[in-house]
Length: 427
Image (cartoon, rainbow, N blue to C red; front, top):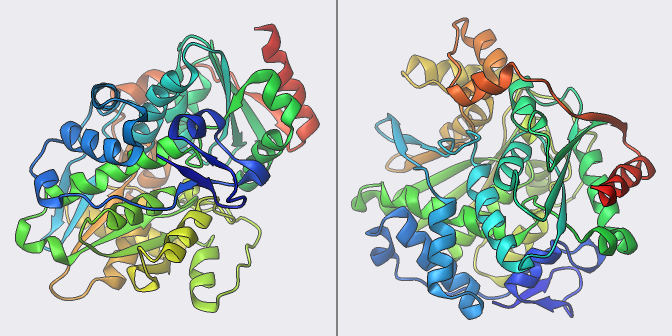
């Protein structure tokens, strides 16, 4: 698999090199310039693990053997992704049945497998930012993994308490930093780290955000899993609505379409941080200051994966007609949670944003799938306030809720972050 730096096309790397490196020169994202075409009917008759192994083998190529990839997928995808009917023409793809109850488990666990192959026993330090669910998925995927130190930055007070407890209570090789700022400032600090070559070299720094190609490619697989659960007669009328913050999830769906999956349309559903919907209308990229919303994991004003969407458009494998961008405000988010509950489906704000965007977009005869990216209990306070009824905690959340958080408070200051990273030399 040949990957090209979107910003510096002369920089071309293999899959494993991209996994090791994370970002390219000038903070450029690595991305393929061509896509294989797959036998979709054959793939949709397979199991999740078997199908995903074939898809990832086609994308990665012969750098890893078929048995290597099959084992990696089997170790990563140990949980289902059911398509649950909400109404006759709408279903929710539930991506929260993994160990941290969020869709990030797919990418995080596959990346842990890929990085183990790429590093071949060498020590590495993962530095990543989270707006909510990435932190837990990455922390649990790499927890107690030999030779790996993980540093997670998150915006203090801007993610749900249970999201925070899932990754700030682990300790050992997981270091968590509560940044006095928003997610975009956390992400900017991570980018500054990658610009500091001496620091990157000293600590062998990598990233586990969806900017890492291994996480992104793993996410492609659950779009195929969703389509496999749709009756064959409806598969050419499927519209996906994706809760969108950093836009890795939407990018993965567009890649699935580029591979031949018959997705009719992708709906990029944002909250009030609506840089992409405004850009889609005006053609002007104008991020505003990030605002806090009920769907906090999507509180991203400058989505880092958007250049990959632009690359897919430039390659001609998708078109503007394949994407609809919709902003859903706070009032509609609340209404969405309530409407889903009235239909017998318990959900949470991020999925509600996607549901409301889907309902605005869906045409007669189409079948809509919105992505359920996190278990409702991860947003217990918000959902209980909206519905006025209590939500029981799954065991994994009940256990960590009572544990002590171990995060360190820091300002949004690169020099302070650098000092915290250098302490890892002594570990």
